[in-house]
Length: 415
Image 1: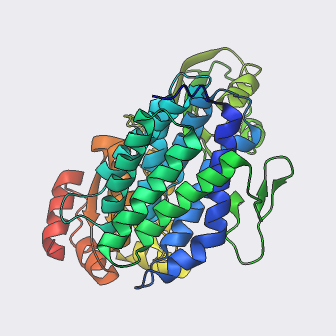
Image 2 (image 1 turned 180 degrees about the vertical axis):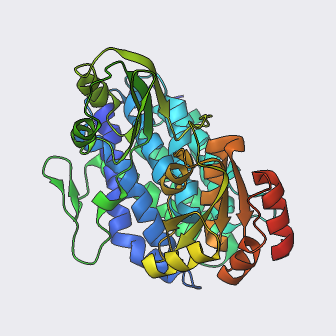
């Protein structure tokens, strides 16, 4: 075994993630071209990466473990499409493997990378192995041998790429999922070497989208839920809402128990709490990372059960509401709704429980990820077409529970 003493720092990790984002900026249209049927995995992966990199722009955390966790939280919450969910789980595994570390050796980072590959493999349903899983397994095996040899991290990534390319040759055809894996690894290598120039983002100069590319600012997520009570019966709720507007895109305020009950979503929980201490004594504070599995009890919900549908635009959204949908989130085959949009829809106090109604096969992993995060508060009805979803919605009965409705809707749709 060699005497490699390389140390991977938080700055190295930042460059690695930025390098991967930069590589997807260059390759996402080519990835889209490998997939037919109207779905755009390259765009979904690019928008997932946009959510993942944005915490790096303003965090004060220098440790590799803290940065990896922030990136993973944003990626899981901002994941779009099946490809985005798989990549987000890779980041989640990396975050788990680097948890608590300020710096990491090449061996520690290599093992965390293997952990990430394992998470990515697990998220896909059982059944016939897809090219991305076959390549991922080969990549993990190549990385394993390199980690055992205790070589520098760039050599570990190079070995992983070589093993994956050999697997792709055995598959015998180009594949969008496999190309995503290679693009990610290549971008990480370039980032670690500092050999990349992002055409759209700079951590020092801020965020600017190039013409024709999805604006990364549209994919900023607020993955931390804060619930607290301010003991101040005279507090002005409108003034509080204005103060929170820039820090929290989702805010619910209500007067209860001689004060103000606050429920909001933010990317900066510390800034919100610092602001809140000036409003009055704070009680019953709770901060939740919404990218992890959690339970949330609704407060004075309007409905027992509500149905969440997906629509491409406002006109289509109104049509879904006329058919019986209570909540509509934006989405279409080329722009799958994100995990965060589904979680936010079910996080409000509008209903005790929710049914998430999917009208497309490509949404399946995103809906399953939202269900895993929210637990028993939501049920899934996973259809493969809009017509099938409308048939399912016609079977909804507000007198039934969420589980009873989901079962009836699946039967009606022939699922």
